[in-house]
Image (tube, rainbow, N blue to C red; front, side):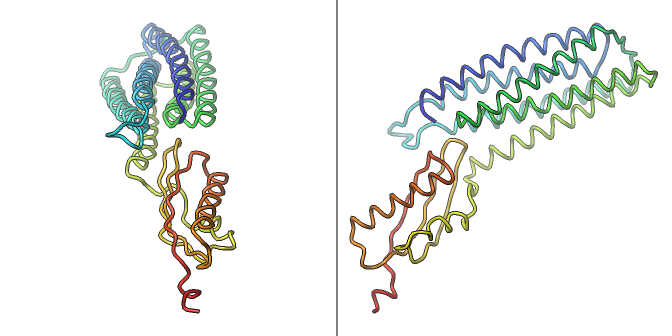
Length: 293
């Protein structure tokens, strides 16, 4: 990611942080007033959204540092570490919600439903939809892994808030108060699922998981007439960068300059198809069959 993009990501995260704090404050205050465990739980989850934005800002700050002698590949994986931190926070938040729900099972409290509380919930739901869509689009545009991870986090709030809204309406229609802690457990399940998805995606980057199917890369490379075979194809990446290394068997009559140009052409072709931030390492081998002839 270029330096200017890091600044744009920081700006997006800061704006979303303010939006999340406003939404969380409203939910916690209204949830406490009407004594709704599910709405209060949703409010604390929104607070975790704000905390994740802060972690993202810290991660981006370190990720934006340029390459140095001890880090020749740069510091971009700080962004991935920030994503993992968000998933850990979500697991802790889920645990807190579960404990709160258990207490409500022991001592159920009848929530006071008001038109005002419903309006606040619908308003915050709309805000979450806007935040999630905007953050995801910006993440794709700026090639930011932290924005995409955080948008997944925020997207879960939409479904959670819909669940809370359904619970409040159900209680208003006369269903027993026990539905409130049940809804809190459902909220916790959403939080755990989202945390797992973020953890899986970011840990795959840290562990250098396969980024692109080798057969897809092979198709691109074999489209060049002078390439006779390609093997030992490996790829790893984050949203920001794609690293590919491979061995290509070429026409034995190619000289050094022609082989050098061929590798650059292959790199441009892979870059055009998969990721413009590509780094290719190619080991060139002469075709043994042609040498024997």
